[in-house]
Amino acid sequence: MAEAPGAAAALAGVRSSGGVAPSTIPQLDATAGHLVRRAQQVHTAIWSEELDGHLTSPQYALVSALRNTPGLDQRTAGATASLDKSTAADVVARLERDGWVHRVQDPLDGRRKTLQLTKIAGAALNGVTPRVQNVQRRLLEPLRPDERDDFVRLLARVAYAGDPPPMPRPDAQVVSVSTAPGHLVRRSEQVHGALWAARIDGVITPPQYAVLCAIAANDGVDQSTAGDIASLDKTSVAGVVRRLARRGWLLVEPDASDGRRKRLSLSAVAVAMFDEVTPQVLAVQRELLAPLDDDEQRRLIGRLHTICYGPTGSA
Image (cartoon, rainbow, N blue to C red; front, side):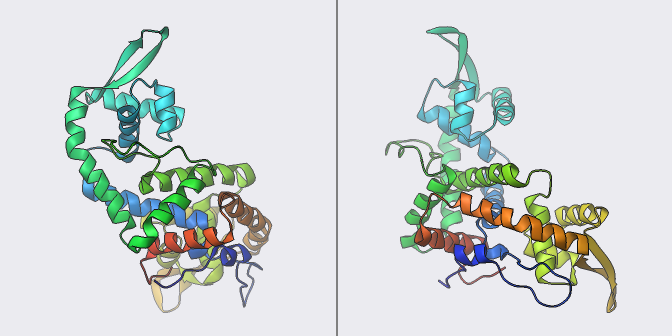
């Protein structure tokens, strides 16, 4: 496998050249937060193919929590599945409507209701779980067999801020969230989002910053290419570019060789903002990877890169 840029490369950044540009531009394909977001997109795409709308990943995570630990209340089940209070309520309501769970009065606490899986859920899980297992297998498929367990172990430490839960029972009848790479990717993205909000909330979002990175490193790039580099679909990058342009952060000019295309550059205001916010962005990456030592960070970044771009791929 071609070794991807390590965490140190991402944190050091690369110097831009020519024109008005930021002094330091992080490499997106070596930046943990970006790679986690892109890996989540890969996982979502595989999940959609395998499950075909029958059950979402958050729904399965909550069902898995209830199967492994019967008698959880909604709050505890949601926390185990890495769902916030609002999302957990929505997921439980959907599962109730579909006949997968029902509420039971706690015999030891009349104010508390627990969630239980129904017979419908038990029967359905027999068919769903092998497909969920296949999602996890396909997500790890780009890695060598001898890299997969190490990747999951390192990702779990990032996802749980250095304190992953105990290993599931060997006789567990469902895919346990604490060792499922797809769940660990989603949880790691949540950790990154919380760290980002603590340092940069209200200034710029991770997708907006990724687009600015793509443009800063490729002055005059067109919108479609910027979206590909930033790992955004066509609709998402169009929305980001519109918002950035409204803020006066982008210069949009027609392509002299193709009137249908627009070339994008950073404005002087955007460059100043970029230079101001980039140290905070890099601090977020350091905090995200803090549970790992330098060698472990390099291994995790390299394997995330492989999952996102393929064994020999690049951004």
